Image (cartoon, rainbow, N blue to C red; front, side, top):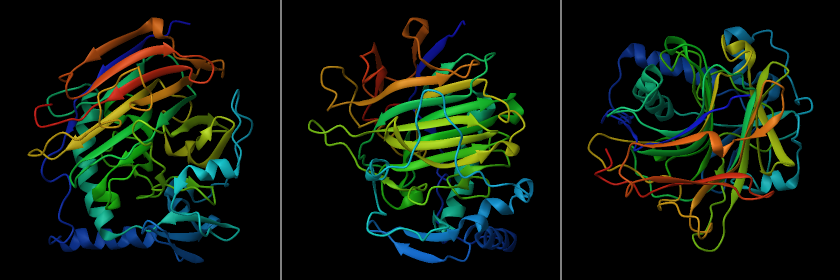
Length: 397
């Protein structure tokens, strides 16, 4: 099978000064009414409420009364509690899969309920502005002066059924109005109706009120023109795990001393796109799934899979750091951000390594801002690996 990949280094997605708004600003009555309506849909009556050690409010919601069931396409949806066997990968619940997070260790949700981070008015106001500003990325599907990313991209024309990578996790200094992600994209469809799922980790103080690395996912069926959202800020994602939920904080690496890495996987199984997260491929927690019925192109397969990073800022600010905030190097993996075990599921439903012989490296940012290196296959433990990131700065546009 011909399989061509592109490494594209990016500076950033440039967000206008209205990317994150003052949530206290005046909204029209129609806007306020819409937000109140969304909050009623999203914040179900909890069986139990937990205040985590990092200050998040987690509601334990009856698994059969979670917000996704209010989506018009999911009214009669039959909840899938566990995916069937995943080829080449074991996804099971272990204490190890819970140990990678901080925030829900001291107490959990009762049996029959799932943890969902409580949504606030501020979350919805900022999320609405965020989605408006990332639409050009999907509309253009290329880097530009105002919309850039870097990623490993599978050429369109093939069919893909999943993607996997182990990503190092790091603390970054990110300010309100900025964000930085390490993630995987799974996409299909023409430009005007792109279906996309994104997942990985994100630093976003305007959403989480801190710049810690958090579990992140998003979806859309039209390039975020009118559908989809991040995490659980709209109806769609089916939460299954009783111990892992969007927004949980990852344990960070310690520069020069410890490298914490976590596996992220999405695969199409039994008609749904399942998200699994854990410290090892054999110890991943099924977090939940995006039902296939939500999509009109991703419901059968993906046409492209991308591994990479995404950063954004206000128009007057500096570009934020990416990865671990340092330029990548291959001499000491305690001092660099990396993605290892980079894989995809092909048309034969087999997990395959990305082939470094069919990759092309493209860069669209100054090398003192961000860079990327691809050392290739580093053996059985690491697999196909890339190192990436950088400090960002005011001249990275």
